[in-house]
Length: 381
Image (cartoon, rainbow, N blue to C red):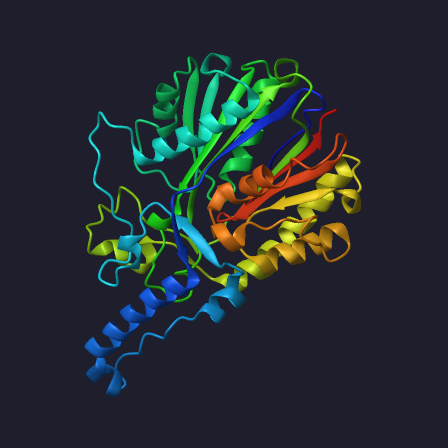
């Protein structure tokens, strides 16, 4: 089902992006050592049941397995020590009081300030904040309003969640609001603390996610000036699937003991996701490029969702008509891991400054839902 389609023409631009990278890094080697220590303990504890054929041993992980399965080499996290502790294997940080800035707002504000600084903007220049992320640390008050308050923005703010497509969906909402005359400038902020929803004790997924925060400043072209990236068109699509799922929520009232219940954390059927999402996203890109009268083979750069290197290679090949090199489809997955909706924004943030006026590219996300979001852009003169 197509959620919405728009053409902003010369009206709306991405004026700047911002990035916050956590100070802690976990390498595959460190992660494997921690997981295998946990596996050894579990197997020793259940040795009798395993020997009797009543339980399966926990299989060890390995650096080669992680690299082959995902292309990830390292990831940034907000809390390293607890994640690597075989007795905990989950992030832990002191609970903050209601009068203190929340951890999601803190990193979101850092990314937002980076974007504002790069655009030469002040808080008074911004009309709204959309906090778009795959998980929120609380239902309300909205994290976006907390970010708005901390930045000193006089306007509106709200949270939204479309899992890994949250940022691109929010960019379309921001662009539509600006095109309708309801705002001149909107910050799309994606504080993704995905380490909190990952089951670090699941061999098939314990290596996937990392933490980060990004911000995208979307503005009316007349307000932004001549710099930035013109939004040529956007396209959203959703198709319901249980192949990527997280059942945790306030209705669960989960205790610390149930936090590691598998279906209350990230679970996926990776093979089905690969098989079903790659053609869906590829066809959506080609269809929208044709509608915008763009030759997909002439797209200068693809900033694709950073979840799986194999998926990105195949999607880029189907779109460009040849095997894409690192310049055409840059990767940040290797050092950031999967950062959910922030992944394509990181790739754009780190790999867009070298493009020339007139160059055309694509921001693309895809993930749970299923969901897919496209933002076609052109470097302004």
